[in-house]
Length: 338
Image 1 (tube, helix red, strand yellow):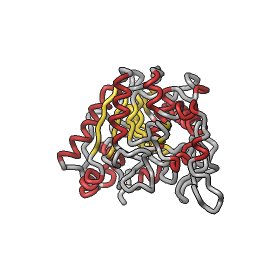
Image 2 (cartoon, rainbow, N blue to C red):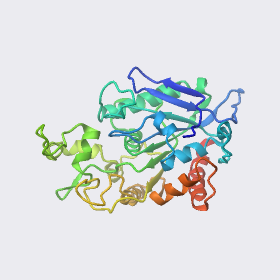
Image 3 (cartoon, rainbow, N blue to C red):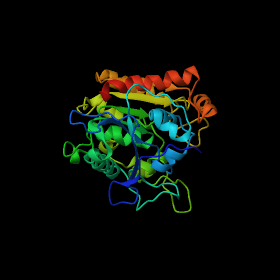
Protein backbone atom coordinates (compact mmCIF):
# COMPACT_ATOMS: atom_id res chain seq x y z
CA UNK A 1 0.00 0.00 0.00
CA UNK A 2 1.37 3.40 -0.97
CA UNK A 3 1.80 5.67 2.03
CA UNK A 4 2.30 9.37 2.46
CA UNK A 5 5.60 9.83 4.26
CA UNK A 6 5.32 11.84 7.50
CA UNK A 7 7.74 14.72 8.00
CA UNK A 8 8.01 13.81 11.69
CA UNK A 9 7.28 10.17 12.44
CA UNK A 10 6.24 8.49 15.70
CA UNK A 11 6.50 11.60 17.85
CA UNK A 12 5.85 11.34 21.60
CA UNK A 13 2.93 13.16 23.26
CA UNK A 14 3.03 11.61 26.75
CA UNK A 15 4.27 8.76 28.93
CA UNK A 16 1.71 6.11 27.95
CA UNK A 17 2.73 3.80 25.14
CA UNK A 18 -0.12 4.94 22.91
CA UNK A 19 0.96 8.60 23.10
CA UNK A 20 2.34 8.84 19.58
CA UNK A 21 1.61 10.89 16.50
CA UNK A 22 2.86 11.51 12.98
CA UNK A 23 3.14 15.02 11.60
CA UNK A 24 2.93 15.83 7.89
CA UNK A 25 4.16 19.24 6.78
CA UNK A 26 2.57 20.63 3.69
CA UNK A 27 5.27 21.15 1.05
CA UNK A 28 4.10 24.74 0.65
CA UNK A 29 5.03 26.69 3.79
CA UNK A 30 2.84 29.50 5.08
CA UNK A 31 4.93 32.14 6.88
CA UNK A 32 3.76 34.41 9.69
CA UNK A 33 4.72 38.06 10.15
CA UNK A 34 7.99 36.99 11.80
CA UNK A 35 8.93 34.86 8.82
CA UNK A 36 8.39 31.56 10.68
CA UNK A 37 6.49 28.63 9.24
CA UNK A 38 2.87 28.74 10.51
CA UNK A 39 0.60 26.59 8.35
CA UNK A 40 -2.97 25.77 9.35
CA UNK A 41 -3.21 22.22 10.69
CA UNK A 42 -5.89 19.52 10.65
CA UNK A 43 -5.65 17.02 13.52
CA UNK A 44 -6.88 13.59 12.46
CA UNK A 45 -8.34 11.42 15.24
CA UNK A 46 -9.23 8.12 13.62
CA UNK A 47 -11.67 5.46 14.67
CA UNK A 48 -10.92 2.93 17.36
CA UNK A 49 -13.04 2.86 20.51
CA UNK A 50 -13.08 -0.91 20.57
CA UNK A 51 -10.35 -2.63 18.65
CA UNK A 52 -9.03 -0.58 15.77
CA UNK A 53 -6.56 1.92 14.43
CA UNK A 54 -3.80 4.20 15.55
CA UNK A 55 -1.95 6.88 13.64
CA UNK A 56 0.06 4.27 11.72
CA UNK A 57 -2.99 2.29 10.66
CA UNK A 58 -4.66 5.49 9.50
CA UNK A 59 -1.57 6.28 7.48
CA UNK A 60 -1.13 2.89 5.88
CA UNK A 61 -4.70 1.84 5.09
CA UNK A 62 -6.42 3.02 1.95
CA UNK A 63 -9.82 1.60 2.72
CA UNK A 64 -11.59 4.37 4.62
CA UNK A 65 -13.28 7.40 3.11
CA UNK A 66 -11.60 9.89 5.38
CA UNK A 67 -8.14 8.56 4.65
CA UNK A 68 -8.52 9.85 1.10
CA UNK A 69 -9.45 13.29 2.36
CA UNK A 70 -6.42 13.07 4.63
CA UNK A 71 -4.14 12.31 1.66
CA UNK A 72 -5.74 14.84 -0.64
CA UNK A 73 -5.19 17.69 1.79
CA UNK A 74 -1.46 17.12 1.58
CA UNK A 75 -1.54 18.41 -2.00
CA UNK A 76 1.96 18.17 -3.46
CA UNK A 77 3.16 15.89 -0.69
CA UNK A 78 1.84 13.06 -2.86
CA UNK A 79 4.59 13.77 -5.38
CA UNK A 80 6.94 11.88 -3.05
CA UNK A 81 5.04 8.76 -4.03
CA UNK A 82 4.50 9.60 -7.71
CA UNK A 83 0.95 10.66 -7.00
CA UNK A 84 -0.32 13.71 -8.85
CA UNK A 85 -2.75 14.95 -6.21
CA UNK A 86 -4.60 18.23 -6.36
CA UNK A 87 -5.66 19.82 -3.09
CA UNK A 88 -7.59 22.84 -1.85
CA UNK A 89 -6.22 26.35 -2.03
CA UNK A 90 -5.07 26.40 1.60
CA UNK A 91 -1.92 24.55 2.53
CA UNK A 92 -2.95 22.41 5.49
CA UNK A 93 -0.51 20.45 7.58
CA UNK A 94 -1.84 17.22 9.08
CA UNK A 95 -1.33 15.57 12.45
CA UNK A 96 -2.41 11.95 12.83
CA UNK A 97 -2.49 11.03 16.52
CA UNK A 98 -3.41 8.23 18.90
CA UNK A 99 -5.13 8.77 22.26
CA UNK A 100 -6.21 6.34 24.96
CA UNK A 101 -9.05 3.87 24.49
CA UNK A 102 -10.18 0.43 25.60
CA UNK A 103 -7.88 -1.61 23.40
CA UNK A 104 -6.16 -1.62 20.04
CA UNK A 105 -5.02 -4.06 17.43
CA UNK A 106 -2.17 -6.33 18.50
CA UNK A 107 0.26 -4.21 16.51
CA UNK A 108 -0.53 -1.11 18.54
CA UNK A 109 1.21 -0.22 21.77
CA UNK A 110 -1.05 -0.05 24.80
CA UNK A 111 -0.15 0.44 28.44
CA UNK A 112 -3.63 -0.27 29.77
CA UNK A 113 -7.31 0.13 28.94
CA UNK A 114 -8.92 3.46 29.74
CA UNK A 115 -12.54 4.59 29.56
CA UNK A 116 -14.56 7.77 29.81
CA UNK A 117 -14.09 10.25 31.32
CA UNK A 118 -10.35 9.45 31.53
CA UNK A 119 -10.16 8.94 27.78
CA UNK A 120 -11.54 12.46 27.27
CA UNK A 121 -9.01 13.92 29.70
CA UNK A 122 -6.30 12.00 27.85
CA UNK A 123 -7.50 13.49 24.56
CA UNK A 124 -7.38 17.01 26.02
CA UNK A 125 -3.87 16.49 27.37
CA UNK A 126 -2.50 15.03 24.13
CA UNK A 127 -3.95 17.83 22.00
CA UNK A 128 -2.46 20.41 24.38
CA UNK A 129 0.93 18.66 24.30
CA UNK A 130 1.07 18.76 20.51
CA UNK A 131 -0.19 22.34 20.21
CA UNK A 132 2.36 23.54 22.77
CA UNK A 133 5.10 22.42 20.35
CA UNK A 134 3.68 24.21 17.32
CA UNK A 135 6.95 26.03 16.65
CA UNK A 136 8.80 22.72 16.24
CA UNK A 137 6.34 21.40 13.68
CA UNK A 138 5.63 24.73 12.01
CA UNK A 139 1.90 25.29 12.45
CA UNK A 140 -0.26 28.09 13.79
CA UNK A 141 -1.97 26.91 17.03
CA UNK A 142 -4.79 29.39 16.39
CA UNK A 143 -5.58 27.90 12.97
CA UNK A 144 -6.24 24.26 13.83
CA UNK A 145 -9.21 22.06 13.08
CA UNK A 146 -10.06 18.51 14.03
CA UNK A 147 -11.46 15.50 12.19
CA UNK A 148 -12.70 12.83 14.59
CA UNK A 149 -13.95 9.51 13.31
CA UNK A 150 -16.25 7.18 15.29
CA UNK A 151 -15.01 6.95 18.90
CA UNK A 152 -12.79 10.02 18.53
CA UNK A 153 -15.65 11.97 17.00
CA UNK A 154 -17.57 11.37 20.21
CA UNK A 155 -14.83 12.15 22.74
CA UNK A 156 -13.61 15.22 20.85
CA UNK A 157 -17.11 16.71 20.67
CA UNK A 158 -17.69 16.03 24.38
CA UNK A 159 -14.32 17.58 25.25
CA UNK A 160 -15.02 20.68 23.18
CA UNK A 161 -18.44 21.03 24.82
CA UNK A 162 -16.66 21.04 28.18
CA UNK A 163 -17.13 17.64 29.82
CA UNK A 164 -15.50 16.61 32.01
CA UNK A 165 -14.91 20.17 33.27
CA UNK A 166 -11.63 19.52 35.11
CA UNK A 167 -9.38 20.89 32.36
CA UNK A 168 -11.78 23.32 30.72
CA UNK A 169 -9.82 26.47 29.99
CA UNK A 170 -6.70 25.20 31.73
CA UNK A 171 -4.74 24.57 28.53
CA UNK A 172 -5.02 25.02 24.80
CA UNK A 173 -7.00 22.01 23.64
CA UNK A 174 -9.24 24.06 21.39
CA UNK A 175 -10.02 23.84 17.69
CA UNK A 176 -11.70 26.22 15.31
CA UNK A 177 -13.93 23.48 13.88
CA UNK A 178 -14.67 19.79 14.25
CA UNK A 179 -15.53 17.34 11.48
CA UNK A 180 -17.76 14.85 13.30
CA UNK A 181 -17.50 11.63 11.31
CA UNK A 182 -19.87 8.77 12.17
CA UNK A 183 -19.62 8.98 15.96
CA UNK A 184 -22.25 7.93 18.54
CA UNK A 185 -24.44 10.90 19.43
CA UNK A 186 -26.50 9.56 22.34
CA UNK A 187 -26.12 6.94 25.09
CA UNK A 188 -29.43 7.58 26.84
CA UNK A 189 -32.47 5.34 27.28
CA UNK A 190 -35.85 6.39 25.88
CA UNK A 191 -39.06 4.67 27.00
CA UNK A 192 -37.06 1.69 28.16
CA UNK A 193 -35.09 1.37 24.90
CA UNK A 194 -31.41 2.25 24.74
CA UNK A 195 -30.53 4.57 21.87
CA UNK A 196 -27.17 2.78 21.53
CA UNK A 197 -26.99 -0.96 22.22
CA UNK A 198 -25.56 -1.88 25.64
CA UNK A 199 -23.00 -4.22 24.06
CA UNK A 200 -21.20 -1.16 22.69
CA UNK A 201 -20.91 0.65 26.00
CA UNK A 202 -18.11 -1.53 27.36
CA UNK A 203 -15.78 0.10 24.85
CA UNK A 204 -16.74 3.55 26.15
CA UNK A 205 -17.45 3.20 29.88
CA UNK A 206 -16.07 -0.20 30.86
CA UNK A 207 -19.41 -1.67 31.98
CA UNK A 208 -19.80 -5.42 31.43
CA UNK A 209 -21.71 -6.17 28.26
CA UNK A 210 -20.90 -9.82 27.57
CA UNK A 211 -24.35 -11.29 28.15
CA UNK A 212 -24.48 -15.01 28.86
CA UNK A 213 -20.80 -15.83 28.48
CA UNK A 214 -18.83 -18.25 30.64
CA UNK A 215 -17.56 -15.39 32.80
CA UNK A 216 -21.05 -14.61 34.04
CA UNK A 217 -21.78 -11.71 31.74
CA UNK A 218 -24.56 -9.44 32.91
CA UNK A 219 -26.02 -8.31 29.60
CA UNK A 220 -27.39 -4.79 29.84
CA UNK A 221 -27.80 -4.90 33.61
CA UNK A 222 -24.68 -2.92 34.45
CA UNK A 223 -25.53 -0.26 31.88
CA UNK A 224 -29.07 -0.02 33.26
CA UNK A 225 -27.58 0.77 36.69
CA UNK A 226 -25.44 3.66 35.42
CA UNK A 227 -26.93 6.90 36.82
CA UNK A 228 -28.93 9.03 34.42
CA UNK A 229 -26.68 12.04 34.96
CA UNK A 230 -23.68 10.10 33.63
CA UNK A 231 -25.63 8.87 30.59
CA UNK A 232 -26.67 12.45 29.94
CA UNK A 233 -23.12 13.75 30.04
CA UNK A 234 -21.95 11.06 27.64
CA UNK A 235 -24.70 12.03 25.20
CA UNK A 236 -23.76 14.79 22.77
CA UNK A 237 -27.38 15.59 21.92
CA UNK A 238 -28.14 16.28 25.59
CA UNK A 239 -25.82 19.29 25.66
CA UNK A 240 -27.59 20.92 22.73
CA UNK A 241 -31.01 20.15 24.18
CA UNK A 242 -29.97 21.77 27.48
CA UNK A 243 -28.33 24.76 25.82
CA UNK A 244 -24.92 23.83 27.27
CA UNK A 245 -23.13 24.87 24.11
CA UNK A 246 -20.56 27.43 25.23
CA UNK A 247 -17.75 25.26 23.85
CA UNK A 248 -19.42 24.49 20.53
CA UNK A 249 -17.33 25.08 17.43
CA UNK A 250 -18.66 24.95 13.85
CA UNK A 251 -19.20 21.27 13.11
CA UNK A 252 -19.41 19.33 9.87
CA UNK A 253 -21.49 16.21 10.55
CA UNK A 254 -20.55 13.46 8.09
CA UNK A 255 -21.97 9.93 8.11
CA UNK A 256 -21.54 7.29 5.42
CA UNK A 257 -24.92 5.77 4.58
CA UNK A 258 -25.35 2.88 7.04
CA UNK A 259 -27.89 1.06 9.20
CA UNK A 260 -31.69 1.04 9.25
CA UNK A 261 -32.42 3.53 12.02
CA UNK A 262 -33.90 0.92 14.36
CA UNK A 263 -32.92 1.51 17.99
CA UNK A 264 -30.92 0.38 19.83
CA UNK A 265 -28.29 1.13 17.23
CA UNK A 266 -25.40 -1.30 16.90
CA UNK A 267 -27.42 -4.34 17.95
CA UNK A 268 -25.55 -7.38 16.63
CA UNK A 269 -28.69 -9.51 16.98
CA UNK A 270 -30.63 -7.27 14.60
CA UNK A 271 -29.79 -7.71 10.92
CA UNK A 272 -29.08 -4.32 9.38
CA UNK A 273 -28.15 -2.61 12.63
CA UNK A 274 -25.00 -0.50 12.62
CA UNK A 275 -23.30 1.51 15.40
CA UNK A 276 -22.50 4.14 12.75
CA UNK A 277 -26.14 4.38 11.70
CA UNK A 278 -26.50 7.43 9.47
CA UNK A 279 -29.87 8.36 10.98
CA UNK A 280 -27.74 9.99 13.67
CA UNK A 281 -26.66 12.70 11.23
CA UNK A 282 -30.12 14.29 10.95
CA UNK A 283 -30.80 13.88 14.68
CA UNK A 284 -27.60 15.63 15.70
CA UNK A 285 -28.08 18.34 13.08
CA UNK A 286 -31.62 19.00 14.39
CA UNK A 287 -30.30 19.35 17.95
CA UNK A 288 -27.60 21.78 16.82
CA UNK A 289 -30.11 23.77 14.77
CA UNK A 290 -32.48 24.05 17.72
CA UNK A 291 -29.60 25.39 19.83
CA UNK A 292 -28.66 27.83 17.04
CA UNK A 293 -25.20 26.27 16.66
CA UNK A 294 -23.27 26.50 13.40
CA UNK A 295 -23.08 23.21 11.54
CA UNK A 296 -23.31 21.46 8.21
CA UNK A 297 -24.52 17.92 7.67
CA UNK A 298 -24.13 15.32 4.96
CA UNK A 299 -24.84 11.62 4.56
CA UNK A 300 -22.19 10.18 2.27
CA UNK A 301 -22.72 7.34 -0.18
CA UNK A 302 -21.28 4.73 2.16
CA UNK A 303 -19.87 1.61 0.56
CA UNK A 304 -20.48 2.80 -3.02
CA UNK A 305 -18.64 6.00 -2.17
CA UNK A 306 -15.71 4.07 -0.73
CA UNK A 307 -15.66 1.85 -3.80
CA UNK A 308 -15.50 4.88 -6.06
CA UNK A 309 -12.45 6.34 -4.41
CA UNK A 310 -10.71 3.02 -3.81
CA UNK A 311 -11.09 2.13 -7.47
CA UNK A 312 -8.99 5.19 -8.33
CA UNK A 313 -6.46 4.88 -5.49
CA UNK A 314 -3.63 5.87 -5.48
CA UNK A 315 -4.14 8.27 -8.39
CA UNK A 316 -5.94 11.60 -8.13
CA UNK A 317 -9.71 11.16 -7.72
CA UNK A 318 -11.52 12.03 -10.91
CA UNK A 319 -15.08 10.90 -10.23
CA UNK A 320 -17.26 14.04 -10.00
CA UNK A 321 -19.14 12.71 -6.94
CA UNK A 322 -15.89 12.16 -5.05
CA UNK A 323 -14.41 15.50 -6.08
CA UNK A 324 -17.59 17.32 -5.10
CA UNK A 325 -17.49 15.74 -1.65
CA UNK A 326 -13.82 16.60 -1.15
CA UNK A 327 -14.51 20.16 -2.20
CA UNK A 328 -17.34 20.48 0.30
CA UNK A 329 -14.98 19.45 3.09
CA UNK A 330 -12.38 21.92 1.83
CA UNK A 331 -14.93 24.73 1.51
CA UNK A 332 -16.07 24.14 5.09
CA UNK A 333 -12.49 24.23 6.39
CA UNK A 334 -11.25 27.17 4.32
CA UNK A 335 -12.47 30.12 6.47
CA UNK A 336 -10.77 28.64 9.53
CA UNK A 337 -7.33 28.35 7.96
CA UNK A 338 -6.77 32.02 7.19
